[in-house]
Image (tube, rainbow, N blue to C red; front, side, top):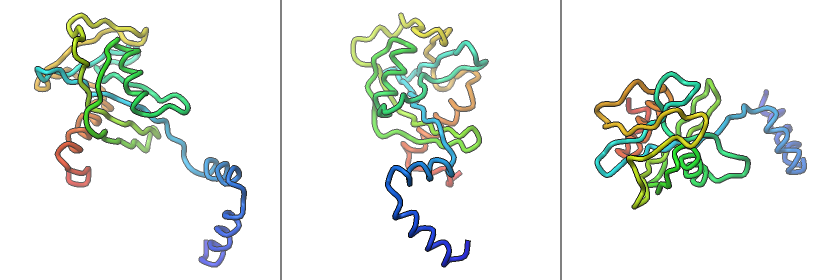
Length: 165
């Protein structure tokens, strides 16, 4: 769009009521789902992975945010729903944007709250068929989203950006 027309379009857009502007923006921009994922680490360094009924490889506990839900609360809720584990979120999360599936994952580092029975965990959701703690050097085959999340969290901890690859 030529600059004068672009300026005119922006002026008209600015005069629209906020609700109408929001509808216009949402109708012309791509929508993304937002999920919260937790890398839960025990004091011995092992991390918790889940095997979902509908996926072949292991993954991290987590899921989609509910409408109006804050991402920190969603992360803790999803872990509790899938594993029964109450976790404490540690540090700042990493964010992974996947353009093709139009998904944004907020990846948290977490640790179990004191007193949790870490060896007696059982799946709490029908979508989870197995839970298991793995040493980071001995991970099984994991979902692509899981490896991306772990790498993003590690980069965030070391201060490296994705562009540094």
